[in-house]
Length: 179
Image (cartoon, one colour):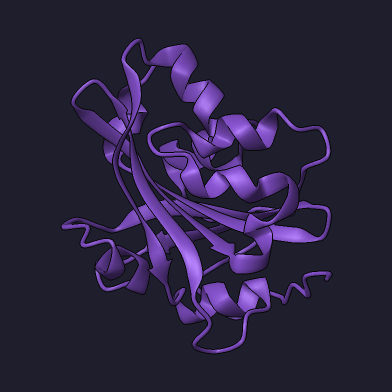
């Protein structure tokens, strides 16, 4: 079954990171964020893994073509350098995306998702969208993030008609890294 992806319906998410300042380089890089962080973080780690079946946020469900109220596999992690959190990442995988070639993605644990996505030449990344998440944005509230605003990006990855939505919110500490 093919996934019918929808266009972005949340006005927060834009095709360009307007006025993103020092975060711009991190936001527009279309390569693997995991690889980039590993290259400049000697103690890179995926921490605080939370994964469960839940209803995606309304704009996530629309973007993935999910019916209202449909549960998806949601994975939330922190990308760290040692004890320093750098990025909050949230992945939303519809049930149909956990079948076939991506069936192991629901069991990643503390392994980075980016390593699996960018290692497979059959994976296609859709265009990035960008948002400056205010303190009251649903994504920050759902993740119980005590700070904001944060610059974030998201994109849909496709393989064999199956979609995964990946959102990454950058903490100010990422700006101290030397790429």
